Image 1 (cartoon, rainbow, N blue to C red):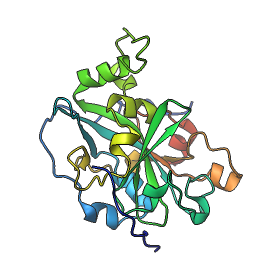
Image 2: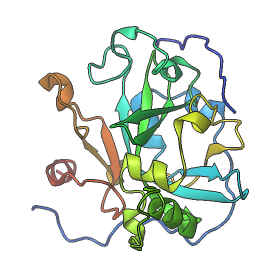
Image 3: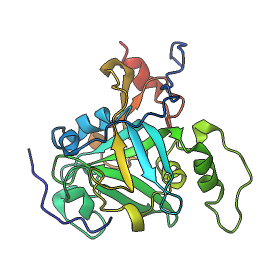
Length: 249
């Protein structure tokens, strides 16, 4: 198993009708923070699945409020061999450097000139897990405010449905105020700005395995099943009904 390079952190239909799988979000109990051992012992694909049901926590500097969401959808990017990965062929750049840092390091990049995308590095040279969707847990009104105020010139007056707040990688970054200048290269195992907490363990049969979203590369990697989400959860970004059916047969 490839080891990470030692780089230094420098920043503090056919689907049967079933009951919607929404994780109980009534508990406001503080759970155990996920430590180095959680990120160190799993491959990228294992980490992506094991993060499902865990809580992503973000402390807002201005108020000290901690807002949280349950991870319900992830994608794996396997590093130097993965042609869809930003670390393909192992070239370290200022942009992708966090992918080569210790497992549990935050990688936030800017895309389309306006959106941030949040990942966390894993075991494997240049490997990382993309957090695609969250089920809001705490600080929902604050998430609404961040979403409404995203366009500073024309703030939105629309009240979003709870399931619309974080059902996409850019949306969740807006809702949790995750930006490159504050979160990139932060070690999520020891930071007071952003971290993961323990939560529900999602059983294998409750995880849908599907191709990643928006991958336009050779078929071998375009259709590789590296997206994972909680079956019948209303908060995922896009459901893959074909994958849902095939994974039940």
